[in-house]
Image (cartoon, rainbow, N blue to C red; front, side):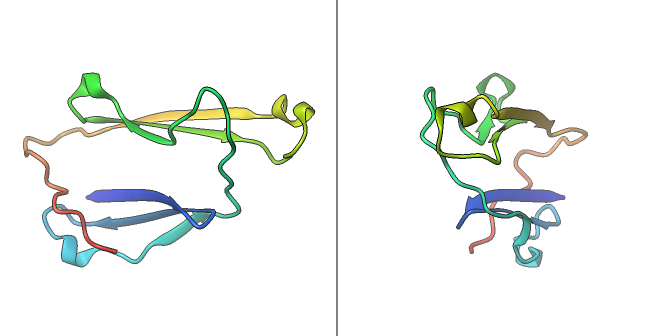
Length: 101
């Protein structure tokens, strides 16, 4: 199963399709609403392929804060991190091509 995530129009979206069959991709489903990118230094990438894993590990990092606009609110920010690994496959990249749209 192939899964694609994206951040668009203040939403976290997800869709999936069977490996090797991008024509069967589901519609984008909303997983979270009201997401806002903030200018934070150093910059944090929400989705990043781990270069040491040859593209088999996806690191996901979200900085979560329900309060915005003041210096005090930065102290309320929580870092949510996880990693996902491609496992149990002997194929090259079975999720290519990626469906359009």
